[in-house]
Image (cartoon, rainbow, N blue to C red; front, side):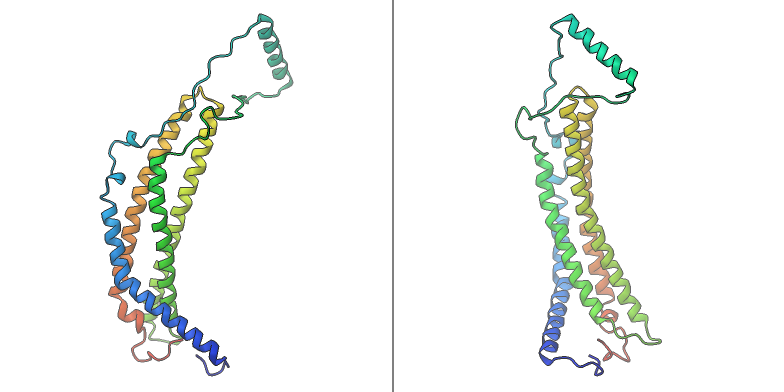
Length: 256
């Protein structure tokens, strides 16, 4: 700490204790947690639940029956309907609008999500959150090791900065995967709402199954990417650990 700044001794002790805790935790993450986690994820990729070849097995039944056609009890009702439609067309209203069926309540109660995908998502989400948290810890550790700015002898510092950039990229990718899962639920909910309103349109039903299949494939890719990120980070940091911890061999005491 610079002697040009006066700092309370009690606060300084707490800050030093925080730095020591981050250092110990980050070094343990790189040496033990990262390799352990990559082996766990590699084993997860062999699990039958994520290796279903026939994607029909993950389809979820949509319990929305197609209603019977509405029969007109009186021929005059049909004429009145036609006249009303004619008046709308003459007024220029509803040219490209399809009314659909008004939905007040689902016949079978609440419309369930795809159970198999929900179960798989609940396994993947904690892994994403863990990766984000651990990367943040290691990133803080490397940033605390960056020495003060000086002319020359900055090769080790550039390695530290590259490591921080890689950790930041991994964090962003994991966060984007979480966002992708949220978008899946929103997209599927909108499609199911369309099926409830337009039960006669088969394409909406097919689109739901397509969305489910796409999400299943995406989840397997996410798990594979998580494993690869642990491998990459572990390998990158171990190969450069000397420069990361001692970026300037001739001035190693000039750390913050």
